[in-house]
Length: 466
Image (tube, rainbow, N blue to C red; front, top):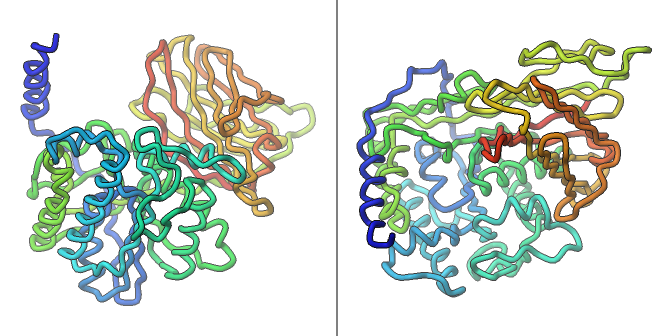
């Protein structure tokens, strides 16, 4: 088997490189709002290189307009050991080697930003655990022990040069650092990783930002948020460096509720972005075909709209919500309220939300591709204006057919009041708002699975309860 492995690698590599050129039809995309000298731009990057891949054009235009700009890195990217084995041509499994990886990527970020015109003094490195921040968001708050990275065996920020040096790996500290940056800098435009990105650190940074902005709602005017997408299965295509092409939304999002906008790059800006990506030698030696696919004629930004849902009281005799066929929306029969739908990507189904009688309802329409073994993994994070976020429940509900388990953080908890109904065409889950801490907002995402096969996760939606 080991003797056949090189041939297998060659076959896979040949498949990747030999794919035909695939150019999607252009979508209707608005132009990004012009950046001017009065703007205060904040770029939030989960890892060193994300700011360049997603926002090098924005950074250059901000510098040209003489706008203020800051770049904040959530992690030092110290978990990508496969890339470093290629880069350093040796195994990197000891704790000190992982820290070395993070220091290398920090140095690369400084060089890339210098090329784009951003001084090192405007770069802020937090240094939280690469590939660990979503677990922290979900499980590590308050009096809990800090998260410990599986590979590094580290439980606090190890980088002496970083703003957060020595901070335990806890959600409170990440949230506190973000709020500190927001209050001191007061940005009016924030570019952040996308809520539908498949990378967990990218999701978590978006979520931490939403909580931070809600916490600071009385102290900071709400900035405009521009999420940028990096990790999406099979996108962008074709791979490699194609500066003659534009960047278009992934096909599965073309009919979603995401409002896309784009920033056009001139040839000089595009070449600088190309060169800035190449400054990340630790990553491009193994993944240049992927990273350079983002060096195109435009950059792409888009977010889901805020969903506002009324907590309606059902009319007498009509206490059970009625769903309208297999459409993309459903209605509370008592209140008559139409609720928007979100997509479960790749056409596997539609997910919709409603709130009635202090119960949060999630409905997923099933397609023919999903059989009776259909199940979901649902994350629900509630936010209350009157309670610290570290005290709010953080639920993960895992269903398989008609059975389900409920976790609050790391703990398995009683499913009091939760109800699941599964039929041939839909799954309906009801969760009392009391189990979510009586929230004013909900952040939620769904992953479907059937017959042991996991499908991709829907993007995180922010829901305001009216």
